[in-house]
Length: 200
Image (cartoon, rainbow, N blue to C red):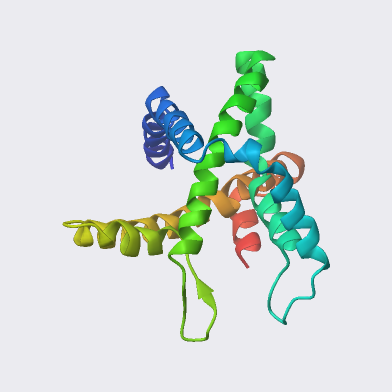
């Protein structure tokens, strides 16, 4: 397992270098200026949509904007947010909180842009349900530009494959690791046994 940990660590050092963080902030700044600071100018509209939409009756199988907001929040607040903030404050001091606010302010525009593209390029599947996401706007959006059809399709496939692989780590790896470590330290149960039980 040491070789696996070293590969993950090396990839982590490359992906989360100052270059990527700077790039993400620059993209957030660009989207913020392109949308004329929509995260400030449309705050009232955001609250109106979420709160009024929760009172409107929905057809069966549909969720309200408030329910979508709750699901979105629940999927974003997890181990990374809790442990990440603690590590940032310990490493960078209280000033790290200010920079997290700044990055979040501009970073929310990246998320907003992804959602807008996801809605714009979504389509109905064979069951009549809406399907959308990065794989659709890469294939149909980027792919619609001259000379980009092939690269859009390749990026869509790569995105889907990486999401599948990431689901193992993002979805449960850190939680399972914590449970296994605690079971080993408290009850001397081997981590492999805990892993197998949790998989079942």
